Image (tube, rainbow, N blue to C red; front, side):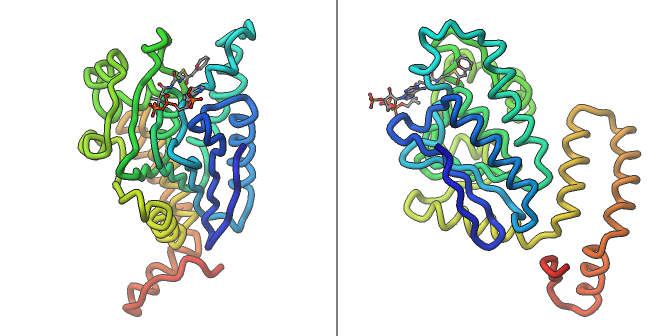
Length: 255
Ligand code: LHQ
């Protein structure tokens, strides 16, 4: 249900339930979480890409899979989606969500959760939860208002309208939009650019940014001062400064 491929330091995880627009069943959610953890632990991996097979990114919970199971939604979220979102957001490496097609419900939450969000021209985003009279989950209620403000977030959630690529770019739901025809190559090229950046410094940057999302300026200033020491003591910093002095590009891939 999740395909794994590694090229030039970029691990691509492809959700693979094409006939269901990659709607999530338990196997998909647990496999994706496991694959993210494995990518984090693998020194050969510098960047992780999460994308979907076929014309969908992820249609959210597979509704066929929950119907009639007498499932506790609380338990289900705690066991599957919540560990997935925590793992993804907490990964020590940049995560690119490559939104190749429709992202709905928890699939839309997943699309937002990447550090970098790249969209194909035909991708769509919909906070579809209210169509089936549920509340947004998988981190949407935290992330979406931080991106678009409370009011736009509520409107998107209440009406479940589909947001296309141009609007997504305008609203800040993605960093870039690429043609469908070249999307996979464009994502790989972007991810390889990220992979050439200083991995240790980016790990600390993620740590600082994620903590700052919920903290005060005072705390952020203190944290920056501490993390800057860890960055400054690392070989990457010496390489960056030496390259600047020698008027050449830094090589952050050597160890
Ligand atoms: C699907 C699905 C799907 C199964 C398309 N399931 N088959 C957490 C905790 C506990 C419980 C519940 O949920 C959650 C979190 C959530 O994610 S709730 C939200 C669940 N997701 C949805 O409600 C989305 C339902 N799907 C749609 O609204 C549309 O299919 C979207 C907007 C995703 C795409 O529309 P279209 O591009 O028009 O495609 P389509 O509707 O024709 O779908 C293609 C096929 O995929 C179709 O099957 P078929 O056999 O007719 O070709 C759909 O039934 C199937 N599919 N989403 N979530």
